[in-house]
Image 1 (cartoon, one colour):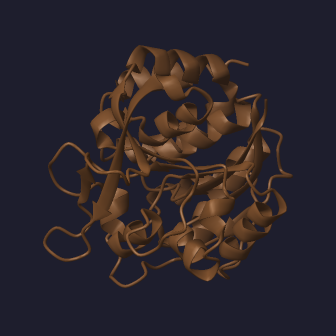
Image 2 (cartoon, one colour):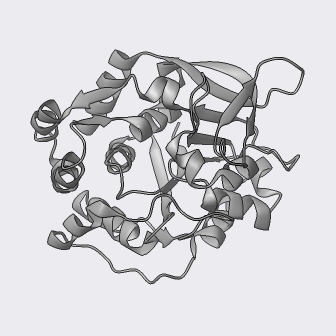
Length: 294
């Protein structure tokens, strides 16, 4: 059965967003209804999505610009470094107007109980959606996030960049919830890594990754490896057993110095969130690259 997916992304900072989008475009069970971009320079991030979609032969997929700022705090993520590499590739141009929120809602309202919202950036767009349309969470089929660190330690990047938005999305202030709410956090994503030289060799095998190879070179200027955070969340939509999940209740801190820390509670009757606690990394890589080869 095909899955209707909306993809919310901060593509252009880490390289993993682009890799997740490539996977969604190649996954035969994915009916990608649209893409929304979030955080600083979302119009540049939208152009990068356009590059990948056009290269994949899917210029028809709607792409909408979302929120450029966090709800209440200054952004930590201030640039979209990889956007410079988009200039060499065919892409659409985008205005700065935020059209993402209403685009998301129109699709969710048109397909109640059918859509997976896959969000892999700061949670600003999703929080704005849930605040503007409080009925929207319950109208989803499921919400799948790349967000959080649940085994202790500091805040994960997406939660830290807009902790107030993360708190909204985890339902800290609302009783309206998605029927299913999954989170792939750092506890599992950091087990899915590949060193720079191996990435270069591997990425060259798959034509869909041609523009992403250019984006990756910008990433490699500051990192010697790729961690497949967002691709793991994407693969888990179609192969949930790639991770072992635990039912918890997540509370997000919104006050310094712990803003963005995601605290799991394991006891009680109200455990609405599923967090990835284990991952089969070999299974993930097999699923990911075999899909790109289609």
